[in-house]
Length: 323
Image (cartoon, rainbow, N blue to C red; front, side, top):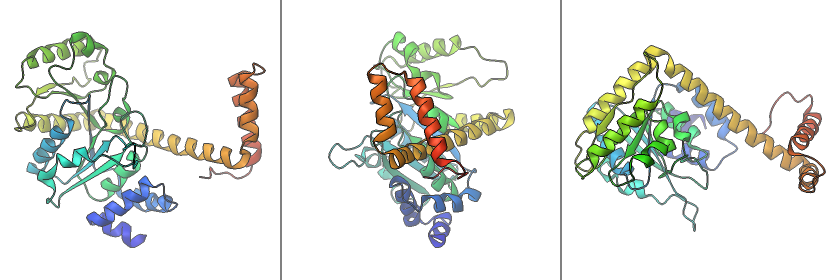
C-alpha cells in the first residue's frame, strides 16, 4: 500500500485507478489509503459541472479540459454516470465524448457509477476526489449525472459550481423554479448558436437579480458558449480563475472546505452507525421499534431516542466509531 500510494502521488495513472477502485468497492484498505493521502490533499481546485440532461455537460467538460490544459494545468475528471440496470457499472457516455484527451498524460478521466445514489453524485465521489487531489491534479472537474430541480449535492463538494443551461429547455418560469439554478457560481448558456439563447440569458439575469446579496458577495456571471466549437470556453476559464481569487480573498474557500469535510465525516459516521446497528441488533431492536411505530404504540422520535440509548449502552467505553 505505501508503494501504491507513492506511485499515485507521482501521477502514475494505473496506481490512481487502483486507489479509486478501492474507494468505489469500499475496500477494508480504504482507511489506510485515506490516512496516507491526507497530508497531500487540499491543493486542487474543485470545479463542479451540472445541469439537466441534454444541455451538453460532457461536451462542455471536454472543452473546459482543453481550456485548462492550454493554461498548463494538470486536470482530473470524475464523470458520474447513471448505473447500468444490468451490470451496475457506469454507462461511460462521458468518456466516449472526451476522446480528445485520451492520450494526454496530464489528464486523468474516470467514469463513476452513481449506483442509485441521489443528488447527482456517487457515494464515493468525495474520496475519489481526495485521490486525484493527492495525485497532483491542479484542477479536478466533477461532472454530475443529468439532474433535475433538486439534485444539488455538487454545491457542497465543489469550490466553484458551473450550472449549464441551453435554449429549448423550458421558459422563464422553469428557470425561476429550478433548484439547481440557485447553487451556481457561474452560469453557462451552452448551444448559444441556437435561437432563444439571448432569452435564456435574460431569464437567468432576472432570476439572479432576485437574490439578496451583500456588497462583497460574489455575483454569478453568465457566459454564452458553443462547446462543440470551443466558443466562449476561454471566458469560462477566466471566470473560474476570478472566482477562485474571490474565494481566497474573502475566506469563503476555507469555509466551503471545512463544510465539505464536515459533511464527509458525517456521512462516514452515519454509514458506520447503520452498519453496527445491523450487526449488533440484527432484526431485534430496530424492527421491534418499527412495529410499535407502525401500530401506533409509539412515535418515531421516541423510538429513535430508544434506539440511540440502546446503541450508546452497547458501545459505552469504546471511545471510537467502528466501521
